[in-house]
Amino acid sequence: MQQYKFILGILLASLFSGVFTLGGYLMLQKNDEVQNISEKQDIVLSNYTEKKNETDFDYKVPEGLNFINASEKVIPAVVHIKTRYNSNNRYSSALEDIMDLWGNGEDNSRGQGTRMSSGSGVIISADGYIATNNHVIEDASSIEVVLNDKRSYRAVLIGTDPTTDLALIRIKADDLPFVPYGNSDKVRPGQWVLAIGNPFDLTSTVTAGIVSAKARNIGIIRSNGEQNLSIESFIQTDAAVNPGNSGGALVDLNGKLIGINTAIATKTGYSAGYSFAVPVALVKKIMDDLLEFGVTQRALMGVNIDDIDANKADIYGLDKVEGVLITGVNKEGGADEAGIMPGDVILKINDIPVNNTSELQELVARNRPGDIIDVAYKRDNDIYVVKVTLKNNENTTDIIRAVRTIITKINELGAEVTEISDKDKELLNIEQGIKIVKITEGKLRDARLEDGFIITHIDKIPVASVDELMAAISNSNQEFLLEGYYLDGQKVYYQLNMKEEVAEDEIKEEIQ
Image 1 (spheres, one colour):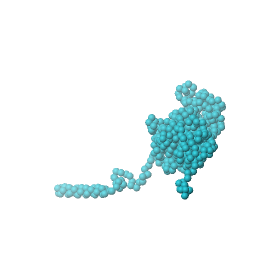
Image 2 (cartoon, rainbow, N blue to C red):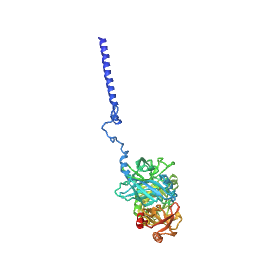
Image 3 (cartoon, rainbow, N blue to C red):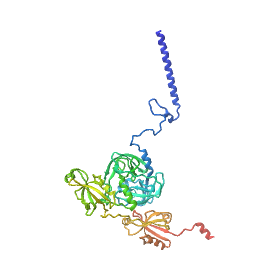
Image 4 (tube, one colour):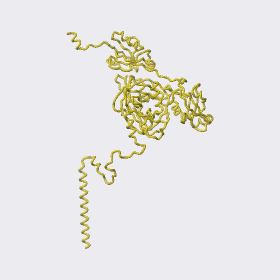
């Protein structure tokens, strides 16, 4: 009986084993019939818990780390700026090294006299105003703006401020997407930010990082001859920023502008994890000044300042290492009239604490001459609060307006021209001339002249004004020798014939 049970058990075990083997074979055979990867991925294994009806966006990103919304808001409003220069030897600039860093290439379309460079910009209003860096467009003979949707426009320069390395340009367009201003005062180290621009001509590139520090001074603008007026109070981030990002947007995760990317600290010329942006609180003020007046209205307290360290605190008998030290006071300046003296320590501007010179300069520079600010300072470890009336660099409260360049369109030549600036005169060592701002269809284009050419003589007759230019052309019997310079110093002659050409078929008709 026991032997019978043993044999029966073996038979049943064999039967079950065969069934399981056959089932496994059939399953494998079914899976082998799958013809594409998508069907293979639909096979759910026993240890894989994903639900088959989940969508691609059902995953959850930790709060504060979702960059998608901000990116989609900002990308359409960041533009690619392409500049053209009719010179190999551009004007001497404090930011020449930065310009070389951000430039993305050259185009020697006129021998070695023409080159191209590029950077980024941020649309800040729906009617075409764009914020960028001064060094992106400085001395450019033409500025082209390419939108994210590939539309291209010629930009007009509204104004520049070399002391903050900012510039305002405009394109003729409406209903454009723009990046709303944020609040750089509320930005804190450790906060996530996005940098959006066009590095290496890779348009609309988004990189992420955190704010590493604020009010950072890296000494990059201070050799431009306006040392006492330059401002460096950068937001430092570790977002990857490279050549071509300059003038692009630094935004928070709400898609609001908190800075204009301006520089990087690197030994290689490429991102090393240290990038710097002008805070939007300063950008707002500079853009408004350039739009309204054409130049920056720089407000000054009329003081010389220095950072405080433990050694200076000991020398001046300070109970704390805080604030900004006053080392000198300009006579009849705003601080002098308010009673501030050398040795005083400024603690707050309009109730905002300041602990280094960069913070103080930025807070003061947000104002205009004639504005009144509250200044809290320490003297003999006692604290005082006074009102200081800010003045301009001429020690008055007057508003300074830019002298607008008058551009005249000459249809006969197919060009827009203006009288030469003192800067161009000094550069080329000439006394007079008429600068070609823009060449359109016409005789000058036919003669292969380029934007930026400066006409000094017509048939050896000097021209110093648009009226003199037109008079010389009128007296030339429609044929004349045009003489002048490009900004690289190259002297060029062009022979022009203003007479209307007679078509060949018209000549045949006359002969017949």
